[in-house]
Image (cartoon, rainbow, N blue to C red):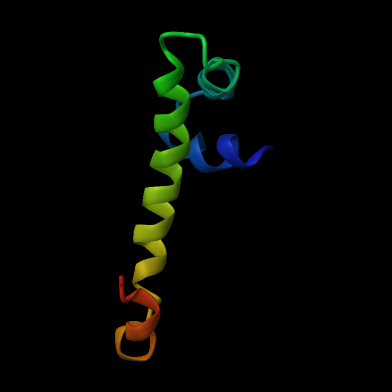
Length: 69
């Protein structure tokens, strides 16, 4: 299973629906007006993964790594 299917599988009732969703998004090209769906699929995974991993961060230790200059 690819990383998109693995990540989004809990949100679909069937493997067929999941595969249709992922392939529909992944097959979109920049020329397609719906290309934003592909971007949203990718960004949704990234944002949720970051939020899940933020619980593991040590804010005091990593403060300097998060400073924006």
